[in-house]
Image 1 (cartoon, rainbow, N blue to C red):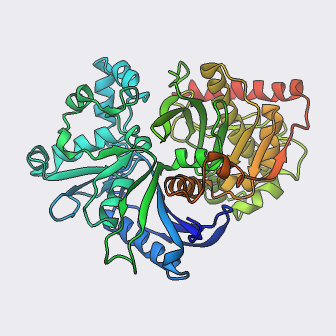
Image 2: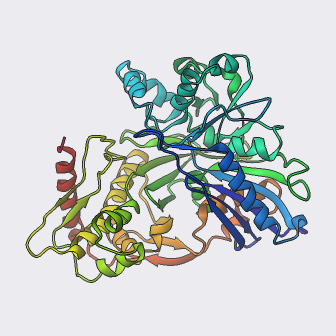
Image 3: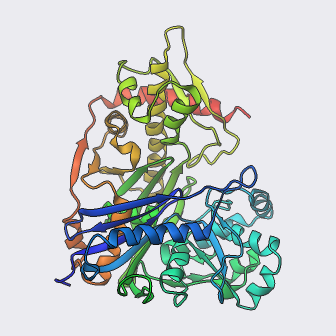
Length: 495
């Protein structure tokens, strides 16, 4: 592979499609991004146009390819928004309905009924997941039940289902390959993460024909090549991982007990648990981290619904700040939050609470409280929620965390990262390259084609940009945290 210079990572996200070229040192050569339309047909419904997803992803890929010699590209790695569901006609390649996005809640009534019927323990035992509209299976069932002719065509083997990775590969290869990888399969509620296969009992539970399912492949594997008329020449496709698993790999969290946290609109924390899945007793998810060289590694995952979205609310809802970047200056203009706590349970609370009835509150206001105290309390709430996640992970895994690796938009906020380090009492490490999701996909793709020799080779690419260490005594931080616990109790009783 000495003649190749780059790996092309396709990063298909919830609001935009991106393409990034990485060199052998894991550095970005060039990047392109295009947003696409968000569709909200009804309250709680979220959809995307699959054609737009493919069109934007193809155009950004072509944009970066056209800037270099295509012969310098070793292969393509794909990472994607997880759980989002597409179904299309195998003959024409035309979707039968819009993509139903992971955020969509239209099947909440159905999952509630399954819980009442006592099905959640079966699902958790087999998949490591909870019964929730978040995952793909209930979305697939909704399409089969509500779009005319779909169930018959599905049973006849004329339809294909896929998460976004499968939809992209179908189009990249001209319909030659209908595949997904183990990480995306593990987010469908249909894949048995112990047997490593689609589960017949779950397919029967959700009334989904096996004929529509993609073949499941490792996360690093030469799947095939792009069709001949797509680019100037064919390019191998050799890496796939759902976005959070890709970020875990991109953060070089390859040993059991290593944890990364992505501070985006929400926050996603994953812990590598090695070659054995750990069942959570604290409302976390057990999921597949990746599969390399026929070896499966697992992870514990927890999600916070309101991360960076709190900052957007301060800007757009309250008008406390004029831009997201301004919040750090406002928050550090005072020495502390003055006893003010903000619990951002605007849409309930995620892990480890999983309380859809919790509602947001601001507690501890006095005549001396200002907008700066609210802004600071908002930032601190992100760190508190992540601390709750980490405590749950440590309790489930019985592993004491040594450091937290961070990425995502809000990780550039030095105040937030320092407060997180103070709270955790362990180093919080921000890497030199924060595009860890795309980088993880590139690493997986590069390993399959020997662009990088092995995991030790890619481990050398990861470098810290800044390390935040605790600057406040743990007893003092424990006092602050006790106030947060009381605030959460009040938010959860507000029903």
